[in-house]
Amino acid sequence: MNDVLQLTCELIARASITPDDAGCQPLIAQRLQAVGFSIESLRFGDVDNLWATHGSGDGPVLVLLGHTDVVPPGPREAWASDPFVAEIRDGVLYGRGVADMKGSVAAFVIALERFVAAHPQHAGTVALLLTSDEEGDAIDGVRKVADVFRARGQRIDWCITGEPSSRHALGDLLRVGRRGSLSATLTVRGVQGHVAYPEKARNPIHQALPALAELAARQWDQGFETFPPTRLQISNIHAGTGANNVIPGELQVLFNLRYNPHWTAGALEAECEAVLRAHALDYAIHWHRSGEPFYTPQGSLRAAARKVLATFAGAAPEESTGGGTSDARFIAPLGAQCIEIGPVNASIHQVNEQVRVEDLQQLPALYLELMETLLLG
Image: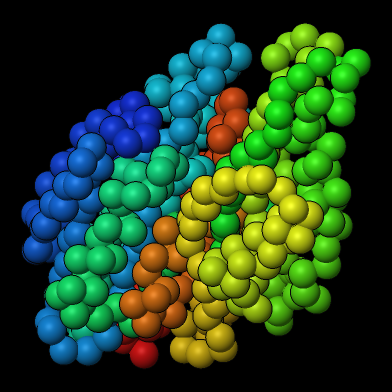
């Protein structure tokens, strides 16, 4: 095995189910410290975060951003091989986290080692930021580190996240932003009673349905540049005692909004609650703001990425703001330009998660070329 394959396999062998880092970050810290990086471990609650830097205080700061935690593997018997023992079959590497995102993390490390070996007196700063809380609540991970950076005045000019962004071939998609995510737990209160005597009860389901239909059908906007329109999706509805002759006394609804830069979380919360009040609901609502949208306009980072990816993919990449959320949503508000580049995402969070060996072997060179293009000109 070459260096990136070997390191990826070592990381997969550490069953780092969120928020447990399971020793991934100490392994990486040891390697980077050996080639001259300054290492800082930032632990908050049960979450480990690693900040590794190399370079001077002058010049631009380029951060490679990733996570060492993975989602649970699911039924072990459904896997063709042990999810925490990397295995190569027919040119494909299998293992939990190989695509999301231990392959990219390994490639980051190899690229950084090669960069400082070739350019020991490079301009600016190269850095690696890792967390073990990306797949979980994302409270004590990069969100908390960003607060520390803000207090310190830590500048970040460019941030490259290694999330699996490619569609079909390595480098065919460049993610230049992400939608915001806002979740709600809505409780609508009624009065429980017998279905034969509805006049003595108040059915929260009947009361809530018109408001929910209005929210679900609403056209929030027409989109924003490369962002799709904002959408609200109801994911869970629960009410009742299990008996078919009892009007429930309470209804609980979970819904989520994925939104573009036309909106802020606060504005969406106000709009939704105005609808609920207009329908005279007796309700309580709890909001969870996962992160505001971010967008990197045309500039030095997108230009460098477009040039490098065209070399690896054979054509200019699609530039997209689709997908879910990533930890870049916490770095962008610090003033950083943020993009996401990583392997094909077809199998992430699935049984038999996989990455083509050829793609994984190319990743360090891709990240290295990006670093050289941005920092060396």
